[in-house]
Image (cartoon, rainbow, N blue to C red):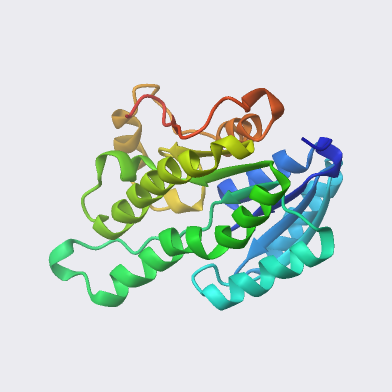
Length: 244
């Protein structure tokens, strides 16, 4: 395992929310963090500044995680520049909530492509390189929706459940190469995604009586990417205040 200050990190969907917090956390010990974004370059650059202010190095990189060709080009460019990616966090995701009876094919496909197909699109080249280097840390961001299912989120729940299955399968394929693959399943976390939701009702659903903080998710991801977590792989760890 290389020194943390020499590690190269890619976090998808890192321009805001949980992805931003993860990128900042992983940059704290001098790592070089690639901050992926799709459309919001300004927010991605703000994430980069936060990483640099906390002792890390950062660069914003634009590509659509649902586009396999764009992912391959972006990942190859990182590998050509640094020769490796030590840590990959597959965080990018979208929601398009509708009851199944009124869900259209694009509503299904767009969510599955961005939340699940992106795992394959981004990870494939990186996994091959990690196998060669005999080291890697991969953390996939799932959701409580993928564990228990949510009404109005058949598409989102399916994608996040798929992430869990992919995590478990991939972890078994590459564990002997000193590569760990884990999933983190957040519950209700204080991000923009909760705006407009009935917070009083939501808090009643949470045994801890409050929503989570992005830093509570990023701290776990940081641990899973550390040397101390080298014997933890194939796991799904919830950050949900006891909901699941």
